[in-house]
Length: 432
Image (tube, rainbow, N blue to C red; front, top):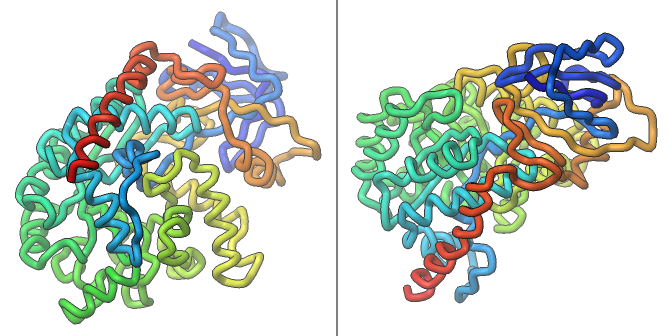
């Protein structure tokens, strides 16, 4: 067994100024250093560092990692143009090998930023069947991360293959490291016939879907079907408990009430919304409707600390009120993610306490002002988050990052190999 000693310990609940953690796959004992006894543990001295639970990214597009630096003709006038000119060109050329290596590249970056559980929304037009197994192989088998995966069903693809890939993965994967949801792109890319088919096969599986990321999605639904998006989905009994409604920038009170009543979550992606100029989600309003909110990166950044910062600052701007959201709200959002992942994977996660999985990180921090149980999260939010880079990252008790570098030789080698597959993808996309 191992023991981390001389650490400041904080888990968004309790704070220990100078403490220790004895652990294996799970945390065995936590306490203050004055009560620590070394019973032959492998010691890790964390003097000058904070011990925090690892982050969860509640919505990502891992394949987008290979879009970095890709130069394509790009002059979008609206959100649909962004999809047509960039993302739908990219994902249409992704096969299972590219999916695997994109998982290696993105997963490695996530790890180095203390993000060890990813809820991903995958798309790959060249190969659908087996794509989630390829992503699982990268994230879970090679990198030893946790993940909740789905395929982005859309009428751009053979819909029966999309349904088959989602349900096959859901039915075959439910461990402490991986499980599945049913992925759907958005209302605007799914016909009624596709929704009927999905509803028939869903078997109460939670869905993971973009909703009203842009006003174009909501307007499309109103024009074609005479109703809003959430009501349309609900008509087909698609919004089940633990469903993820992603973005939700343009939703009315009726839609929010349905989301609340169905036990679904809203996942905001504020940085991506800024980049696409589609609008700012009304997080304060979602919370007032008692809807649990989580935060994703939408495939744009591997730093969840940045996402938490942007979520609060943009909520202040949207509401023209510097107290519209406070660090207590961010605290709730972080814990919502731990609660969700814990339920979907069947584990205790997100706390530094006995019987919780040993998923945590060490990050240097020397506070300039007093730090105690009353202001610890203020130090984390305003001190750590803007300069976030862990020294060590552990998952299931295994040190996956040490001194800011991946520990796995295989992961390092596969990361170098991934460059070949980004080149392969770029070549295919540029030939379209």
